[in-house]
Length: 437
Image (tube, rainbow, N blue to C red; front, side, top):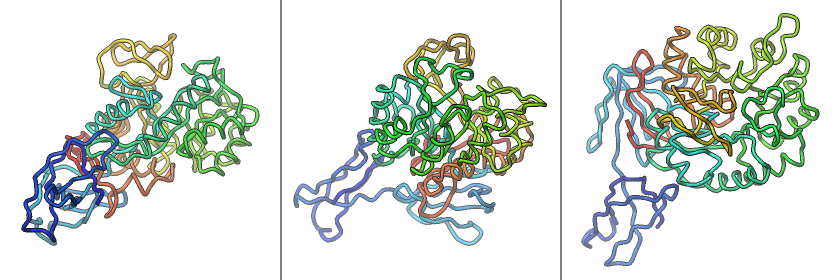
């Protein structure tokens, strides 16, 4: 019988039909992204079932993505949420590890739809080592799920990375590690005028055949793609990508309002790192930015680090998009969680000093984590916790259509939860059933 053992977990082998037979107690350190293993009862030459410890989370409140439950009791079994109830209506189950977060609010773990790397590794390495290093670091900061985000690179290199990522994304979740649940393709269909640090020599015009090569290399796991609306063929590619299940986010763009609306009409639903790498707002030609801020149905990303966007503009964005369409992202790169120095973003060098990542005199991603983004956002805007949490949970899940894997706390969902205090500060993190903070 095939069983799954989370990374670093201890488990006891049981085989009820042979209770009289001696069974070994085994401890497994599962290989990264290879959590399935076989446990054998030596005397019988058979495979046995692994029973993992039940965990119970308690706190003052639970915000599950929809509403509040006071004095919650969340029972976790085998990495999933087994039950949710109030301690006012029942007692704690026996034989369980209890983790109490007094004064805190439990909520869904964060979901980052725009992240390039962390802890010295870049997504485009497309190795188990890279994603495991990222996953462990992100989990410690409350992120349970993310979209592995590419950067513009030579087409062959991008195809290789997408192929490698596809295979890694097919592996089962690892306890205590944030899981990539899709790919965000940022480039190559971006504007030269607003490319930021995207290498100009590798930018391409929108092309359905090229997109299909990328999509097929990723084995259909591209969930989000950033696209500049003003490029010839952008609307046609938008419609085609949507037909294959990809969401379109507009960004790295110098588009006019009319060009932006044409791609919205074709199905685009979001905007990439609002204000950054966008045509500035003008009172006679509002451009892409004015359209993003005034189209009520559009989602819009924000890098809330106080570096990419001033607090006053974060407040403007919040007033424009509101609690149902605003999304907090990190746009983090490989230097996140590392000391100052030189790091890689895709295939080019980035210099990091004093919290800023720069390449060729331009900002090149961030050092931000989503737990810090949450506290920054609440400080900048005064938004209440329950509304602020939507921006890292429910909204990105709805935008990507991945609400069955992220963004809420419900029975049967992966046990990905955070505990935060009233200011939004992270005080606990449980990812795929494993407490990591």
